[in-house]
Image (cartoon, rainbow, N blue to C red; front, side, top):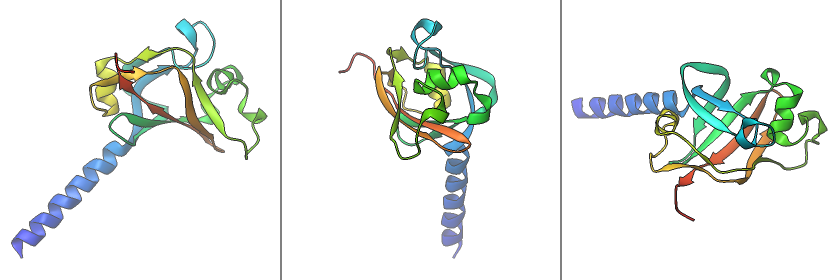
Length: 150
C-alpha cells in the first residue's frame, strides 16, 4: 500500500514538473528583423533575458522542437510583415502559412538551455517553418539542428 501511494505521488510530481516546463512565458528575447537585424524575414537573434516576456510563450514539443507563441496584440504591422511577409489580415483562414527564416541562426548555449532543448541542437536553418495565425496568437513551430550536420 505504501509503495503504491509513493509511486502515485512520484508520478504526480513528475507530471506537475513537466506541465510547468512544457509551456511558460519566455525568458528569451527574440528579434524578428531578418538578415543582420536590418530588415527582412526571420529571426536575427535570440538572447536569454532576466525576466520573461509576457507576450511570448514557448512550448517544447521535442528534444529539438519548440513552438513559439506570440500574442498578436503585441505586434505592429511591420513586425507582422517581418514574421509572415505581409500583415496577418492579408491571410485567409483556409490557406496554409509558413514562417520564413532567410538565414541560418545559431542559438547560444544559454538560450538552448532556457528552452529546455538538447544542447547539441543549436542551429535554426534557413527555410520555411509551419505557422498558425489564430485569433489572439501566432504559433511558429521551429526545429533546431546540429551545427555542421547536413
